[in-house]
Length: 228
Image (cartoon, rainbow, N blue to C red; front, top):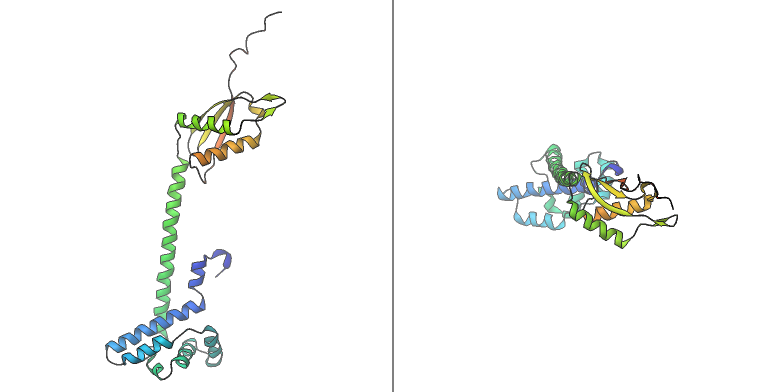
């Protein structure tokens, strides 16, 4: 498997050691069936279970000699178990072990994939809810007042920027309009502060947040100054 495309659990599932562990589990189940049919003494099964361990390095060394993976596996287990090993693989073919073990591993892999899909769907549903979220104006402006009080906007050219209020213009993604005195003078760093604070206060993870600036109309701008 390619490392950068593999989840640790899935990668571990297809390692040689896990394959041999599954082979051993299938062999032990076959031995249990032999005991039930009175074709194998229960004491031999207990001895096999107590002594049989997977030794990948030894299996590889034996396979280099016998040129057969299942034979190498059985020989490795037999070396550990002793006389009781004569019941191993009784009535079985290599395909019985290979096919059954592969089916077991594929079921485990499928379960991992399905669990991942469940988590993915939960994340998608959560992201969709955030994408569509609307925040009441009253709650939004309570947050806005607290955010400004905690970190007032900076003065630009000696003049304090005035931020009036904020409203949500639309969802998908959450988009807001901030009414202020001088839109072109508000630093991007302060907008990032407001965005991050808004995201934290209203639980808006993983979705874009848009804040548009709009200058509040000056009702006295059209009036001429009186002559002194």
